[in-house]
Image 1 (cartoon, one colour):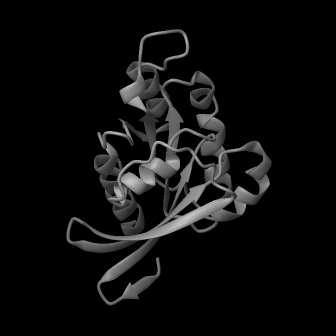
Image 2 (image 1 turned 60 degrees about the vertical axis):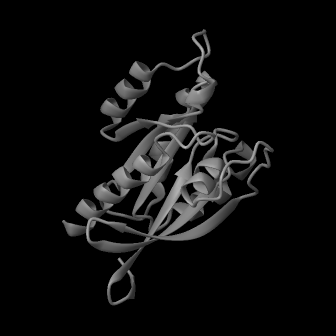
Length: 181
């Protein structure tokens, strides 16, 4: 792990998942930039820096927001290199994004360049839009998938902010443990 000063660590992480699941909106919400109702597809990748504290450790997140559209699949793999963790996102109103989550996770782990699996948190996003129906992914389904994959799970809404800070806190705690091994 590269230190950017004597007391702060730089952690590269990625936001991964299908297109239009809310990765950019989650990043913006976490950075305190609010919520924008207009959807603009991420072209390849975008990143932001954010300083925070995990426990007593000063952290600078380097958050890579990866395009989820299939046309960018091969380009996106390069951004996984040397990550310390990931946020895997699906949209609770679009079952296909949930069904694709395991594939995204396997790509992330296979291309991270690390000897062991990096920490990942599974986010069920857009819970503010959840209605019971055939397409809707339940809390129980998300929790079962996370347990199967051995990762943490949290439900979020980029629109309301529910669970967003908690998701990054979970990831930070896991990365702190991961880097201490």
